[in-house]
Image (tube, rainbow, N blue to C red):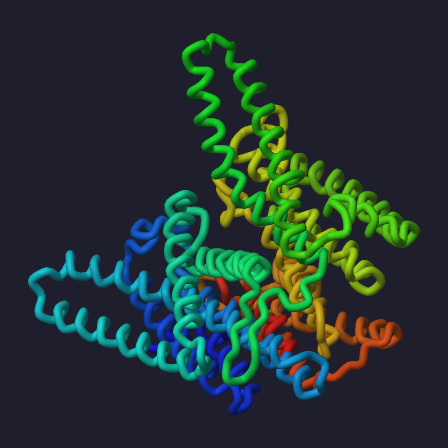
Length: 566
């Protein structure tokens, strides 16, 4: 019984949480308490959920996958906490103002509230199901009462910790803002699990929905601040939304929100178009598809060229249209940036053409074929991150926007690209993808991009931006290849991960760090991290890759980044 409760993934998450809490000072006491409570509550919910044999059908999650509740609930708050620790060092060195730290504190509490609210929602689903199956059972009655009591205790302690952290004139307003994030995340995860059934585990859906709510909640608050000029004061300092928000982050945020909201917009535009043309509809099917495609591309252009840039101009005051600003930015250093673009095009063309032909004619397992793309990410992103980090930030945003547009075209089967895109992407899918939603390429891109985006501003940990590239491009790739070819000793009887593969992954990341650090030193970076903490970060992320059944491209870079920051 104890061995089933203490699974490898849970032990790694427990060590990850303990490492973050151990690295904090008394100034973050309430945040440490809240993260501990979140861990215990998530562990309780995960054990309860996985003890139910029908939890996949109950929540429309991916069949056969573990729930991943604990990992999904702790990962993003852990990232926010580690960034808060990093900014505390910056404040002590007078590198940033106290308002930056307070802004991250609010982001941490909003993230924690989002995850906590989803856990409460899952508990109520389980209690409702348990009441139906044990309607006349005395044991079931008292067990349900104990569950509700535990939920109430965690909720009360969480609210007290939040209120203590924000003692000041605007405590009620801040608590309301945090609560809104929680309710929005619950509503969004309901929509995601209903709209895309069997496409994700609970933990993966929780990570995505809480991240989206935090990201676009920040965008909404920044817009309100620009319009009304609100500045909130707390006991520790002022909170300014959108501090030092540069042009690139504004452009990426606006484009991503526009693309994510575009399906809702296009759905209503299509309904209006069909209503208008229904009475006179006598077209052939092909003409109808072309008309729908034309409507799609015109609507998309309207969103990206007119509506989204208008918001960008509101929150940042660009000197020209944002698209012109991008053009001017690229050509401000034409030799370096255009040369980098040519290099990327060459690597992508050669790699995709080669790997696609192999996937059609070879018996190589898809999991190994996909790891070649991880190596391609190393070839593309490491030189750019060292030489042109700002341009790489913009390029990541452009690539993510292109992926979103192609996925929308594939899902909606928009003529003439829909079928071709589906056929191409289907050659690289695995058991975690489905015909309804293909997420592997998104997770790889975001796994490499997020540590780089989060490292903008003050950063005294030069390896932190490389967290995704090192853990996915090198560690995960070497673990899979060595484990597949030479692995004998398995971590578990039912799993495929081997001890040899994990050891190869950890060793390769440490070797890459030892090569990368002297190169970074020549560009002005100073290594301020102890080798023991680096070894611990690499080992824990390697063990997570070995034990987790979740989408490792999404979780491993976040865990590795968090451990590198502290």
